[in-house]
Image 1 (cartoon, rainbow, N blue to C red):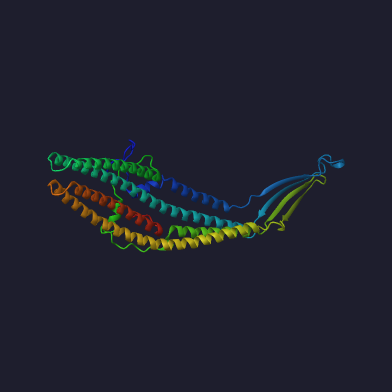
Image 2: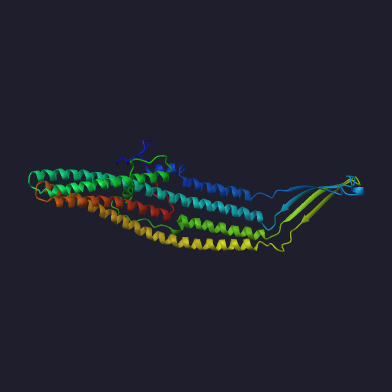
Length: 406
């Protein structure tokens, strides 16, 4: 595999896809952000179970007044302890909602991990395919240079017109431009892979091929029927189920908040005038005359309705995704098999045409046509391999599993 142009000096060959995915678990920004959301939900769930803090108050009466109340001789000082008592199952509802949010964040992380693994596989295969296109462009340029040398020899021998040399030179110029474009595309693909994997430097080569692994998983013939996916295993559907449950639990929290709470008070009062101490106790209950939390309940109900609608949409999308990805996988298998046959035919046609040309039995135009057909067949093979990886990752995405896993 050729080295990408302008690669940094510290760049190294890429590890296998499985190893790269394992390393990305602790380096990929997308996964780290998703994990942080789980930690955030866990913290909020832990906070949801805490009891309200009590309050302590000190109140002094009958001081700094007139006549007998100028000093502190008639002061009444009350030390009071107040505790809010939640009613209506508020604490339990908060805890259930907090746990539901944790479950939802974990479901979203699972979906993010699968999506990331699929995106990484596509980026890995795309970078590998871009490198192969560079190799193909270099091979075609080398072949074109050989054809140019043969054309010059035939023109010098009087067996070809001078215009054949001009044609071969024009072909060489076009091949060099194609090679330059292929190298630029390869460098961009390597950069995208490094960014996605969280690597400090772009990779330079792919000792372990993912394109060939995709073909090997179908036994090499590309015709094995893909497995039947379960729509309910789709990460998007599972995350929507968790979101719906979290929305329902938040509605329960808002309904519980409509129940007034009770504040219990217990204290001790010092009567300086009588030099006596008494105890005080009380209960305060708010009157729900104005605020019955109706607005928040209505908003939570609307959020639940939206979550249920998204769940239904996710179910339908998952069902359609399983059907379409199976068709795509089957089509990719057929495309790869056809590309293999076309490549074999193009290689044999080019070999025979080159023998005929060097023997003076075929014109240069036929050789150029055969070589162009071979280049197209090679590129088609790479595109078919890339499409096969795309089909495998698409099927893994809807099934909720890591592609190319053991």
